[in-house]
Image (cartoon, rainbow, N blue to C red; front, side, top):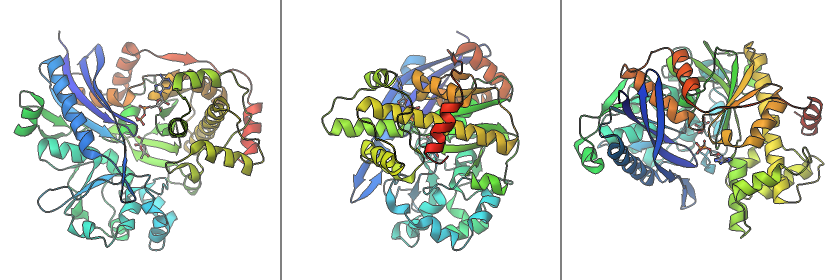
Length: 488
Ligand code: ADP
Ligand code: LRH
């Protein structure tokens, strides 16, 4: 039919999926061929990713993609950032990758700051300070037999790519989230590698989105029923980098909320902002596709909602997302708001109880029902997006006319409307699968199927994907008052 078929593997913190993309210069279709839950496992007190279950989901997805399309021109992989597997001298995985929400990084930041001050780390990396950045995970496991035995460190998408191809590399957008990369040169910082207690040769060679990343191994072709050769292509392997490619913006005056388990809120720039003010606002200069800067801040995201539903289900209370959102739209706004970025919300646990405690701490009556708790979460997320968009604009000097919401949160009409109201700008919601689409597009242009220019790729998204616009309603006043209640 004149289209080229590529498979995009996109692993989020809540689910993984393999999507089949069919692309031509004026066509972009995406079908989900496999989706699987991403369920972490606590073993001996440590929270791990179930990496083999994820890999099985990838293989099953590739098989399904082949059945659907016949021939697959390329495969690309993206996932959540910062986490990694360690390989020994024979290339065997040394233990399951540890989850970034595991508490082993408690206190690790201060350990690193003792050798390199935070100000200097920011000048080198431009990265926001999150307790689970790879640099702190490594510092936390310094001196462990596992790290001593390790010959290679592979970030999660690079690990899966290694299993598929036998070739090890480090894709640069995801490498930028380690806080070990120099933001200007986009190469490893010796000073920070030393502070983390590792040497540069732990990392396989850097590769850029669009670079070839090997071919499926014979055993993988057997497992998946695909007919070789099937090349693997490096994409923006950080899911957020692929999601930003997948933002259907016209021009450059836009902000985005990549809205899934996390909400990543910011703008796209040509060059990093490394000012002291930017550091104090904890803004990140993450590496984007085509050398762009993803100038953004992490907001705790729909994790708060996912984990509340989890707690209610565990307590035997019925809690399904659609009816909770329906009910939340019918309870009063701003009854209570919390600072969603309070570190108390980071680890897994009883989120409704933590939210109630945060309300009490700030002199507010805690939510009295599930619907009120959900409303509190959504009002509070919109409030955090408002602050992050304002900070991004103020610190970068890039004014924005619209806020794009992509990812699963684009399906949440109440959240989209609240975001439009809070940011005082139209919200364009969709696509839901922006990361997979960004992944597909970077593969398609490496295959020469579509134009190289990001703007042309985004035009293709606007022409082919279903988008919903939410116009701002109400005034800024209640938002300002709500922000004041939590001191923001
Ligand atoms: P991740 O990539 O981090 O796993 P996703 O982008 O898949 O996350 O988004 C998952 C989130 O999207 C869910 O936690 C949920 O809040 C939201 N979501 C998914 N489907 C719907 C829906 N039909 N209505 C409202 N929200 C939805
Ligand atoms: C979103 C994400 C985000 C990171 C976090 C660890 O999935 O990649 O950009 O900060 O996971």
